[in-house]
Image (spheres, rainbow, N blue to C red):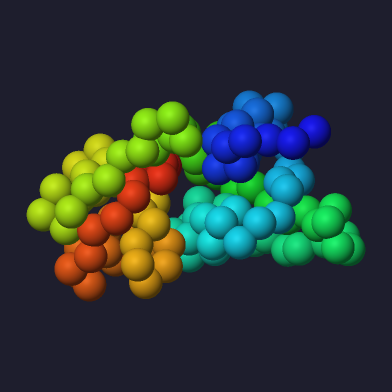
Length: 133
């Protein structure tokens, strides 16, 4: 099944796996999904991810993270901001703060995909892909 918005697809798969308390979930592998997974891992929202499969059918296996006895998901929410139908850009002065800095905004900048904090540090703006908290 061809998906138009790979990022929204990835976020939905992670959201669903979290609700079902799965350990891992599979996401189709693209350059974009790999970079988003890397940011999520660096920020401590997921345990790890690895690429499996050959050629066109490559997938990322994302290992989700839970805390405490009740296995509460670390990721409470994922929100897509910039969609194919409505792109959302912001310059470095207007970069969003998610929940006063508790969450992160994932920004696609000219020097790669990074968090809002990192983009602010480097003085970069870009496309606001999604919020995670």
